[in-house]
Image (cartoon, rainbow, N blue to C red; front, side, top):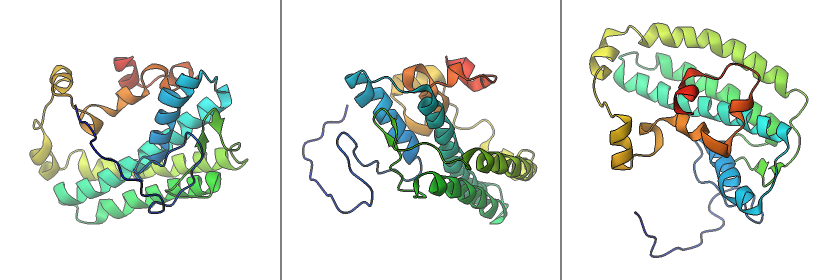
Amino acid sequence: MRVRVRVEAGLGYPSGHFTPADPYSRSLLSKLVNKAKYRKLSVEKLMEVDIPQHAQYARVLLAELQRIASHMIWLGTHGMDVSGTAHVISQYCFLMRERILDIFEMVCGARMTHSYFSVGGMRWPLPGAFEDAVRAFLTEFEEYMKDFEGLLTKNPLWLSRLKGIGYLSADEALALGVTGPSKTPSIALNGPSFILTKSPGPIPAWYRKWS
């Protein structure tokens, strides 16, 4: 357990918008997800606030886009370092991330320093062009995923450096108090934080495993 012994306020360093019960999330790689968790799992729970269903779905959609954008940073830099593909994969991963940031900018006016989720829902409704923009991105992203698969999945250098190493069982992760990406990001969607289990489409296998 970590105990903070001193805290110094540093308002003015990060750029963002502050409102009551709305602290600034420092992580720029997964800011929307951090904001959603903070609101749903702490403030809204303490205040016993009911979130409109459309806002819950919007949060899931945006959080999933944020997750993909974060994974594109990981995949691009990881592939460049480990797979021997040089800069080939990284430039396309970052291109896909930019596409998502375009959507975020359309939604809330910011690419990384978002302040869109608010206690009780969202600051304003999703724009009318949101659905078309997301569908266009998914169509493009699906084609790029085929290229990522081709570059990595059967890449002998990539496999030789990664296959069978760094294994950590669920029991070991819990016993060691492991958090973050090493623990399994799917756990973050379990429980009351999101409305994924009520989605009309099929639930991903990784989510069913942990629910």
